Length: 244
Image (cartoon, rainbow, N blue to C red; front, side, top):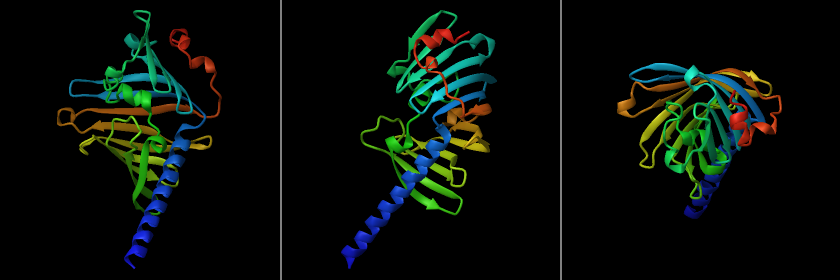
């Protein structure tokens, strides 16, 4: 009997894991799409200041993205290119393209609470993590993501709360490799764009005691999933070409 009960437990765990994978894949497919153009504001709050960065972005699946800074004036024309897990930056003031080295991946991106690693990796939760449902109601699933042994990721664990109807996250909690909570991302104002639902507001808050007043909020102003994006955005020549 005990062997039968063990089998039932293992089988049920497998099914629960498979369901978690399905949910995470649906979320990723919904948020990404084949193409995405967006214009957004990033509001960065720290103990010393509050500032706004205006951004334009073009992306293709999860492997290619191009970002241009529109505001403030001193940063206007700075561009970023991501191809797979590599990232380049063009700085118009010095007319120079720089490849972001691995040693800089955990540094702040544009003075925000996001890192270069966030911008480059955009880790695929379904590819890089093993998913398990912790709890589930009629509307929300809470899913634990643990990194696969083969994945090169910085997080020891991620807990994702998923709105099952809209196939979007409502909250993500990130843990370091010691399983200490490091930061929380909240998502709100879900809107329909074409065949995709998207949270139009994302707010990232670090949990470090020294950064307790910090936050980075991204507000989407324009989102378009329906128009294919020209491949000319996704090569190194684009960094200078589209800087102006």
